[in-house]
Length: 531
Image (cartoon, rainbow, N blue to C red; front, side, top):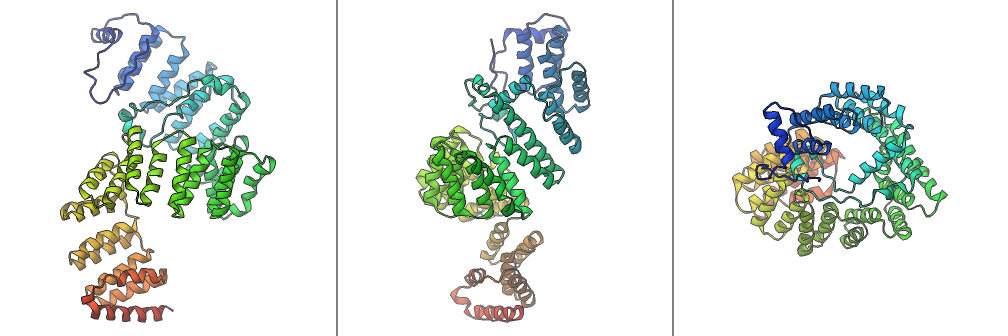
């Protein structure tokens, strides 16, 4: 019988199976009993769930002593050692497996991860390159088993949320054999994943972008249904100014096969990266014309429409993505955001709450509900949901900033100040943090602190014109006209934007007409100087 341990925080209320009680008595009394292999594997898993790796390793060693020729137990021990970060021991065990002819891609991946953890990036990439073509039927089975895990909705920071993630319902495919109906395709896909990982190491760890692009191209040539790889490749070429010239690589796929759905999708990715929005929409639309179930293309169209502020079309695209693909919290939040932008807060909240039903730790959904509440001036409700989001992601500066505004709207000045401070710690590169925080002091008539705050922001964002314009205003109000003139000059040199200036002029009330005239005169003098 397979026991399913699904714990939250307290394990005492869960009755232990008899074999586990017997095992713990044996350890306590330093005795020796015989156990079925299946029971020992359950014990190993139990201690893994209770986060007692030493006990799990001890149970594994006992299992190996009783069943020394069972390779799965040896493999389990290697994984446990890796989880405990005992890398030297892991590498010794892997070397022993090599000598026994038991070295395969499961071990190669563990060895690669160890080299990455040790920052031995060259070793990691060499290991993958040397074994890229050595794929056995057993490796394919391992690869397909790993693919099954992709049916579970992934979350970031899994290490921090292990207990929470244990609650997630598995969305695994019910029939593994389906993966073996196309063995050649599976092998190509596995080889493509290896090439993509090689490229990732060159790109992210070694900084060798050109070499990375070669492996990304190999990956897509082997198996082009890899949207992340297409994005990575297009992103590097765009950064190098080569994407226009390299567009032929993506074009070749659809030249060879006009009904290549992923070829059209990847073409859309390239066009979107180039800013050719009409061409990108055409490519994604062509992809769903060929295969109406291609939710990825609907999703991309939804994102384009959101960027273009065409929220109604975005709503339609995200709805289609949900209709034809697997529902997940991220997609539901995208749909919710499209409703929110149309000020249909009821529909937005419904979708955000659906996302929470799927994943009660999905902070973006709580944040979405909070912004809906804030837009309706329901500040108490907004604060509740902002804080729920922050319980999950306490280092998200955007959440602290919007919470600060909600607190301020309720007159909670001290709480607002604390939240602005947190926002500046976690999101110092966000100009809105400094603009809104300084405005917080401005509204209270604390002009000098407003100036100091915006100057703190300029230390992090010295080339942000909006901060220079605002600093000019604050300095002028503090009657430091020299400093006001200097900041105005920097702002105009960075971005001579009339909209920025109009926003600044909006700070002057009717009673401040004399100050407005002086400020505008200063602006014209500085503008003339800059020109």
